[in-house]
Image (cartoon, rainbow, N blue to C red):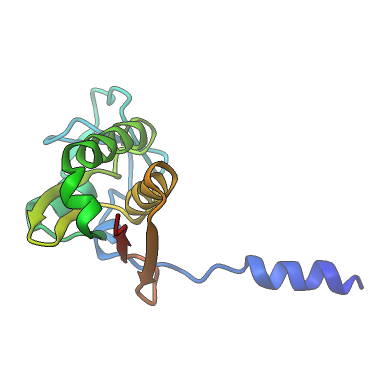
Length: 162
């Protein structure tokens, strides 16, 4: 038995994620979200047109937005954030548009200015991660990530002093 292959399999084990917003997904047949127009078929949400027989539901992203229950929260802090507010907001919106095209459940909930910078909330952890990586790449800041035990929520702190 090849020990290297066995150790790689151990690293690839992924525990089951239990996200309450995804647990109530439609179980049988196609569906569409009456709020945003996303369609659900074969276990996946997309922007394709729904079948005529599709059930009308509310997608997990629209439910998260209505409940203001963020899966991702980014705290952007520092004098750089305050001085480059519009550039950062434009980058965040651009990243959201690119992510949302292929992944309808990854959306912004809100961008809120505060005294130390910005607070950004998202409907998915992937969008929060992607925004933080884009900020790191574009502005060379520093990010810190904290996930919950099921990895269904992430809190990201991003900062740059000058």
